[in-house]
Each structure stands twice: as structure tokens, then as C-alpha cells.
Length: 204
Image (cartoon, rainbow, N blue to C red; front, side, top):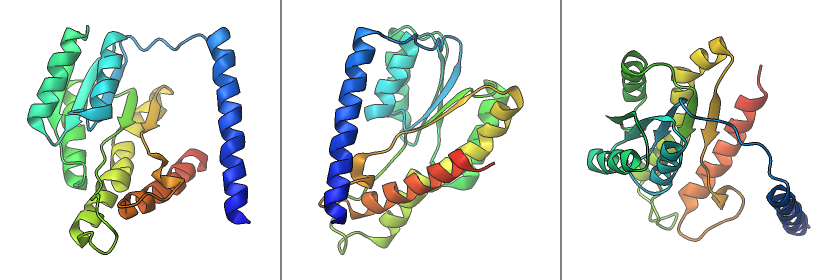
């Protein structure tokens, strides 16, 4: 019965979102101007992080790129400048380490300024079956994919609240809604993150 209700919920949500997207396609809403905004993207060295960086570059934002992969981060910076970005700042940061997140965040605030759009995109997954997943990698998944959000929020949210201006964005996967073979740690992580994000949004 629970499975039936969940399936029905997903189907209704899909129909609603499809209908909404058609209406917005016919009558587009006014897009927010992000030119000049200071945008920090974690996990910017490849994948979704790189694509997001290139889009914000095209829109005229100042980019602050974080990644543990220094070479990948530099390549994203090069592509962003080619895509129209005027100011791009790259920082090597291991988001699984709280002290490093705080240290690099302080460096960003001193060298660039207060972040107005924070995009928590960095993420890892073991890609193994549950029993075969090494404990250390499962813990690392939780540290990067969930706990790092707390540390970046604590580092940058106070300035956003003080200026009454800013956005927090969390990149997540559908693994929090459905089980995926070989992604046991990812599923648990996304469910946990969904609950944490809800608490952050609704707490006073």
C-alpha cells in the first residue's frame, strides 16, 4: 500500500511539473539577474559543478570555485573565462574536513568578499554494493555529501542574513526517493540530507 501511494505521488508530481513547465514555456517568468553576484560552487572541477559554473559565467556572476581536484578546478576556471566570466577565483578544498572548509571560507571572505549564492554541489559515492562498501568511504560520503553543507552554511549564512540577501542551493540526486543498485550509501545520504535540508529551511 505504501509503495502504491509513493508511486501515485511520483506520478501526480510528474504530471503537475510537466503542466507547470508547459505554462512557463508559453508564459516565461522574469528571470533573476545574477550579474555581479558572488557565487561559490563546491565540486566545481567537473560534472554538474563545471556546467553550473559555465552558466553563471555566461550570466555575468563572479565565480568562486572549490574542488579537491586542483587541475580540474583550473580547467573549469579557464572554460568559465572563455564563456564570459570576468572574475574567477579557484580554491582547493577538501569538503570532508570541517577545519579546511572553515579555513578556506575565511580566505574567500578576505580575498573575494561575502558570498551571495552558495551552491553545495560536491558529492561522492562508493558505487559498491552495501556489504562491499568500505566503512571509510561510507563515512567520507556522509562527510562530503551531507555534513559539508552544515559547515559551508555556518561559514557563509551569517553574512547573507546580515545583508538580507542570498541564496543556498543544494544539488541532490533522486537516490533519496528510490533505491539504486550499488548506491546504498548514496540513498541513505540523500534521505538524510533531505531531512536536514527541511530542518534548515523551517527552523527559526
